[in-house]
Length: 91
Image (cartoon, rainbow, N blue to C red; front, side, top):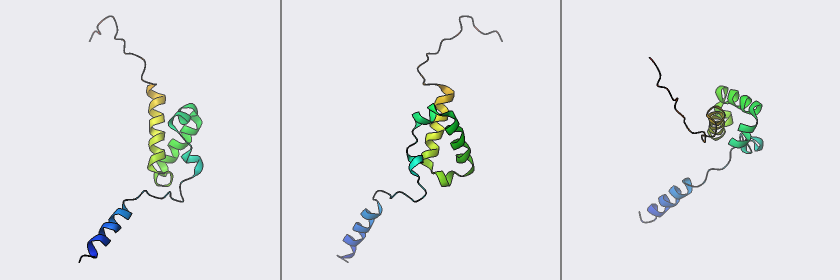
């Protein structure tokens, strides 16, 4: 019993280690940053389509970067202040 507890503790700590990169990770996909995707709309379009069809192959991390780049291209950098119209809208 005394030897079992440290063995279970060691196994638990080993299981909590950093995950190894998988074989499906490509070096070009790892180099894609949100800023590079915002600057290259054609590459962004291709990756958006691939994320829609085969997210498991590309991985969640890359698809999340693609989604963030899409949001930045659509919404802008967020530094434009809101300026309400001078006249109230008429309903």
